[in-house]
Image (cartoon, rainbow, N blue to C red; front, top):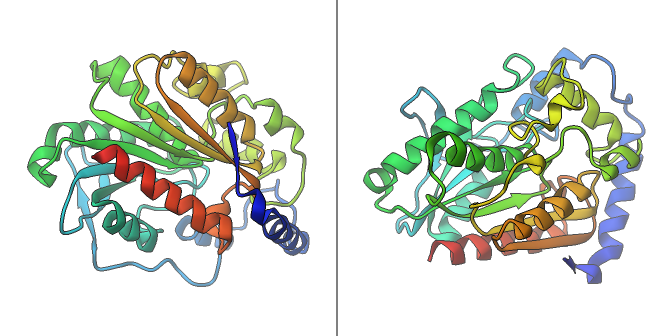
Length: 312
């Protein structure tokens, strides 16, 4: 484990305090979501007034199996990055981060395929994982014809990182596909829905995610499941056999309730025989890359460099 960005810890912690202070003026989470706010969050995880920017470089399409994806294809393609967006399996969309994904595509020379998976609570588990599995199988079968390459990478943020690992496991266990994806980029993911110690002990501090917001998210995604049921490897990949998975880069902030998820996953990933680079960002809260911080710029560059190198 390496602690990153300690030189800008003061800036990061100051932002956390500003965020928590602003959040304290809003109603505490826990009750039924306001319908208008819920609809806004569906399109924009931050709930701001400005909708996400849709770039003309993004192309919406439906792949075999009926799953929607959004693609970004640079002039030169060295590989394809299968991306799953975050948002607690209930918010966000494949076109909610066009600017970031197009930047990533041009910087890495990777075609980016972002999955428009179905969202809870209307479509609880296993709908989202099913859609990601379908998209991954389509890419395995058609990447050469569609993008001129068989070099495939996978990853995502938060719930998207969870879906990326679940997808790798499903490809291996259900379809005997264990070597199609050459690397995984996993940013502040959730890998134990029965709750790791850091999830349970983080408390109610009003950062982007805390103990109080995680519990209802799990209930929306896996309604009616008890903790032991949520330890099923298809739900919580931390409990899976991780043998045969590709090299991974796993990143998380020290002020993230999901910190232990990444620490534990990295250890188990390495124990199963695959390289796992674990980067822990000093002072960073969950979802920190959504905000204009020095640590955000650095993390996005590290993600770019990892994916570009993995595609060569």
